[in-house]
Length: 154
Length: 379
Image (cartoon, rainbow over all chains, first blue to last red; front, top):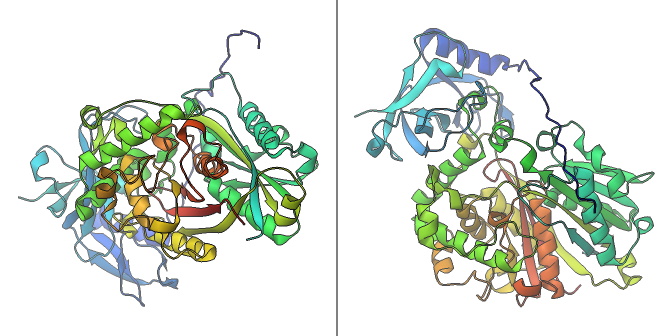
């Protein structure tokens, strides 16, 4: 084959913005989170499992869920990771400061795990089974960033 | 089952195939598969392409590789997901009796994008995506859940990496053949605790193609068929918080169904080789257990005993697996192609003694859905 310098075409800075529908269940979750700093889940009428975030259908039972229940705000770490490599934050396009923690948290009264940041300033306390509580943002936003992170309760 | 794989073709897996377009990759893999089967493109009566629009950076990505896959004026359809699922669609077509030869391709080029942004886009945009979760951070949490539940150690995870990178030294298609030690793995950069850099598969480019034919067609050709004995796939909940991340329930179900079709009652004794979707070290162990090739929580111990080594009783990823090259989407089809070469006795330096093998593919985050293929030398 010919020895040739390969050309790359860059995609450029254009983006494709979306307007994602949150729906009734998610809107209720975010309104409660924003206005009352409370977590809302939904209970399956058949298996009684409480799902957070709330959604219409129980995947296990294939039935519609309508009974909203308050869960949390405290919970227990189900599993977690501590990020030590600076990935690019998809929202800002910049690298996040490391280290930072992600966790799956079982909010009190819920049967599913809810994911968010976990404060890792004292890594020795971040363990599976550790009790945590949310720290809310000063600003009321109506999205997942109303929670800044969860922190381990001493 | 009245269908066989009669040809396979793989490109080398590389960090960046900057000199080739997707179509160029498909052209190479397709022609290798056709040559392998001793067929021409006119012998192929339908085509399934497998790709992902996000990874390809274009919508309807399946269409861009059509010409190079010989689809012109043919029946062509597409699957978005892992190649094993594309192949399952092809198999269904073969078994319908309406098609004699189905060509399946799967491609991706991880080198063209920022993989953490692509995998972040797989998460729910309402609750998860804004937090920056990506494949590695999510899998790190699954790794921790699995290790916590089973007592599997970081050293056992590291041993998977040592085994697979070593196996890759005899695989001319592999991207990362290496001699490394457990210490090398554990002292490599901690990416997302507990996953070190060498616990993670690389970003890769590659394309694989296979040809599936019905039994009537197989009788008419000279190619050495590998028979499809059982295929099943199964899916779990979308939200990872809904699942028990320490277990692979969907894989257990898929494996049970595939073994049942193949008449296998004791997979540990009846499977001779396995090519498994080891995107991360812990996944090889978790999926080995999900496939019933080890008891839950025992794969790490069996690995230490050498059972999964190339000269062990049940070689796993003798090719080097995804840890030695991970072209997303194509990766599962590579697993099938590798098992086919093993069963034909044409795997070169990585050859093991095998009559029956299992190939495994994953679609979705942290193993949301699994596809299991049981292949046999004999009909």
